Amino acid sequence: MPDRLEILPVHGLPLLKTGDDLAAIILAKAKRLGIEIRNRDIVVVGQKAVSKIEGRIVDIDNIEPSARAAGIADKTKKSAEFVEIVLRDAAKVLRADGDAFVVTTKHGQTCLNGGVDKSNVKGDRMYALLPRDPDASARDLMRRIKKLTGKHVGVVVTDTRSRPFRRGQVEECIGVAGMNPMVDYRGQTDLFGYKLRFKNVDLADELASAAELVMGQGREATPVAIVRGLKRVKFQQRTSSRKLSVMSREDLFKGTL
Amino acid sequence: MPDRLEILPVHGLPLLKTGDDLAAIILAKAKRLGIEIRNRDIVVVGQKAVSKIEGRIVDIDNIEPSARAAGIADKTKKSAEFVEIVLRDAAKVLRADGDAFVVTTKHGQTCLNGGVDKSNVKGDRMYALLPRDPDASARDLMRRIKKLTGKHVGVVVTDTRSRPFRRGQVEECIGVAGMNPMVDYRGQTDLFGYKLRFKNVDLADELASAAELVMGQGREATPVAIVRGLKRVKFQQRTSSRKLSVMSREDLFKGTL
Image (cartoon, rainbow over all chains, first blue to last red; front, top):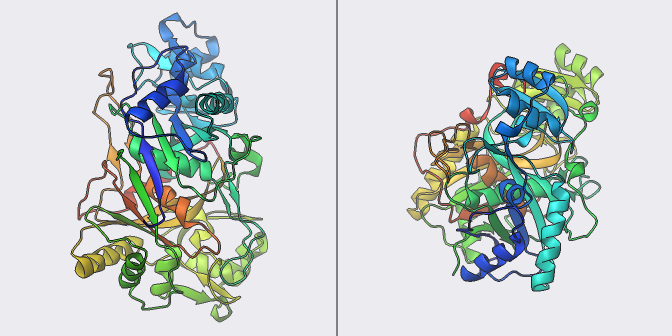
C-alpha cells in the first residue's frame, strides 16, 4: 500500500453540553465508525465542541454592556451586548467600523470578533466564546484519551478564521497538546546544500486546515477528525500554541494594510 | 472501512528541468508507488516544480538592476539584482525595510519577496520566480493528466507563505484548475436553523496546507501529493484563484497591521 496520510472524520457526534466527557464521547463514536485510536494519532477538535463542554456559551440577554462596548457598537453593525462579550476576552481592539471588528485576544490571537461566534449554538441569543485557555483544553483532552485508551496522541483545537489579504476562511490552531506545533527547517540544507533560513512550518495550522476538509462548517456535525500517518511531527509534552502568534512590532507585514 | 480523506505523497520525483512533461513524470512515479489516478482526485503541486518546467529560473548575475531596485536594496538586506527580479512581477511594493520586503504580485497575491525563492534551486545565483500564470499552469497540468489517463482531476498549485499575525509558514493556493477553490455556506443553515452569513471556506488553501503535511520543505523532494476522498469540492472547468485574493480597500483587516 502506498505511503499516505489519513484524515478520519468522526461523524455524527451527539449535541454537546456543559460537563460532557468529550474524550469518551469521541472514542465511543469513533469505535462505532470502526476507528481505533492509535499512538501518534492527532485528534483535531473544533473550538465550538470544546466551548460547549466547558460551558463557554453565553446568553447575551444577560449581558450588561459597558460604555466602551456601547461606543464600539455604534461604530459597527454589532449589538452592544455582543461587543461586550468580545471585549471581556480581548487584550486590544485593532479595528471597529462597519463589518470589521478586529481584536487581539488575551491569548495573543488576532481575529474578527475575538472568535465569538453564533453558528451551531442553540438559541437565538446564545453565543460561543473561545475556550478560556485552549492549550489547557487540548491538554485535558489528550490526558483523558491517554487515560481511557493508553494511547499517546497529539491534540489540536481549531477555530475558523478570516485572514488579511485572503478571501474565505480557513481553520487555524488555537490550542495544542502533546506535540510541537511547528517544524523548524532553519539550519538544515535543501537538495543542493543551500541552507534554509526562513522555513519554520506551522504544522498545527496546516493540521487544522487539513481536518476542516472533512469537518465542514454547517450541518455536518463533525467537529472532530483524526489525522493519522503524519511523519514530521515531534511529539512532546511541553508545548504551547502561544508561539504561533506574532507580536505586532515583529510582524513583517506591519504597515502593509 | 471508515470514511476517510487520503493524502498520497508522490515521493522521489527526478530533478525537473525546462520543458519536462510534469504530468507524465508524476503519473509514472505515482504508478511505481502503487498510486493510480482516479476521477475526482486533486493533484497538489508545489510552485517550484512548476517554475522549473516552465523555465522560470533566473540567474541573478545576468540581471541589470534598475535605479528603483537599487534604492529598495539599500533599505533592505536584499541584493539589487534580487529586488529587480521581484519588481518585474510586482504590481505594488507594500513594505521594504530590513527583512521585510512585501509586495503584491501582478496576480494580486501579497507575499514576502513576491514569492521569489532560492531553496531547492540548483546554483548559488539561481532563483525561482513564480509561474507566469499559475492558473494556466494548473490548467495545463489538468488537461495533460486528462489526456494521459482519461481522468478528470482538480489541480492546485501551491506556494509556501508567511502570514500577518502568525508565526511560521503554511502552504497556500496560487493556482487552481478543474474545481471551485471555495465552498460557499452563505445562505445555508446550521444545526439549529441559524443562517450562516460569513462562511465561505477557502478549500484550495486548506488543500495546499493539507498536502504540505506530506510534501515537506527540505530535502524530501516531494513537490506533489494527491488528495483523494474530498466530498465538499465542486468540480468545474471555469475557475480561477484570483478570487482568493482580497483587494486592500475591502480587506476587513485594513488598518490593523
